[in-house]
Amino acid sequence: MTAVREFSRPRRSSVSVVIITYERPDHLDRCLRQLDGQTLPPHEVIVVDASVSDESRKVAEHWHDVTYVSNPAGRGSMTNSRNAGWRVSDGEIVAFIDDDAFAAADWLQCLVSAYEDETIGGVGGRAVRSEFDVPRVTRHVGSITPNGELIGNFDTLAPGPVDVCHLIGCNMSFRRRLLQRVGGFREDYPGTEVREETDLCFRVIQEGYRLRYEPEALVVHVGGPYVRGNRFDLRYDYFAARNHAQLLVRHFGIREPMVRGFAARLLERATSESLRSLLAAFLRLGARIVGLIAGLVGGLRSDDRPISNSRSMSRNIALRDWLDVHQVDGSDHSNGRPDPLPL
Image (cartoon, rainbow, N blue to C red; front, top):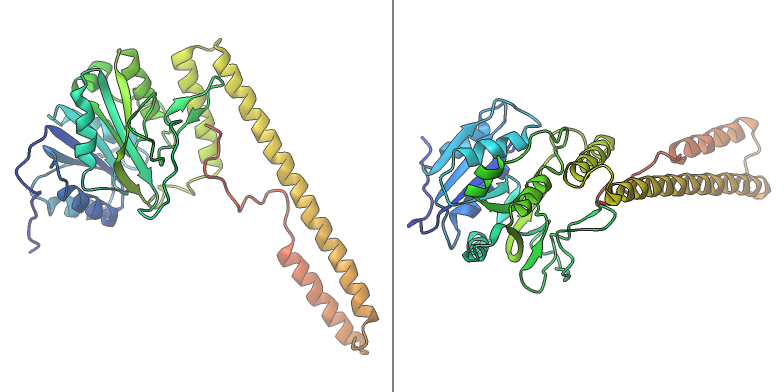
């Protein structure tokens, strides 16, 4: 029988930590271990699990102090899981972390310290891919441009706390009374559910509160396996554009120049990237055609070319096979991008 583990005591804060998880029991176990070592232990830890298997439930049950909530909505119910978590919490502050985000030892302490200011309604922190990442420094964090694009930069080690207009979902917290007042997260951002946290942040600001980015509140967000497809595939592109447009129209109105600016910028970048990709494909194809011709000519001129017609035919077939393997077209996007949309 596996021993039941308890979180460090005594509990001195009134922070409820909500972890949302789906079919990543190993990540969940590491996330819980990191929370166990907090310099400011949480009041409670709530795991909301949308998994089909029982593995994540078994991990959560190894911890005596963890409240386990099953979410039957299953895959693609991240927002629903967040709402289920904070609604069963009773801490004054609710901190949200993903199962593949691992908190530094002073994570909660850094988040909570900002709430001494009563005008602060939400606090988020820094998220890096690796603890060995070299930090960038900028004050342009968590903002929005006049053409509706979001600036994240949530991996930056800003020179001190910064007021922002949105936070990153894997490392954010809010006063519980504010979550109650605004009704929590809206669940009508479909698909990848991108922008659900931004929508909540905007509503907190509309209630007259400020949001704070605290760079010392660090998590290592390793980016676990994606639920469906690749992290940045066409499906992600579609929902990123759809949900962002919904966000802007909902909060600024359809006639707002920001909405038109976003649409124009999106189409401009999409067109530019398509043309660049097409041009690159033609250049690659042209280079290979020229190389093929030069190689054939060189082969015909070389002193050691085969005399036998059968050997010559065999060598030409091999060359055509090589071209078939290496030829690319304009649909190749293997280089990828850090974000499929300039948002």
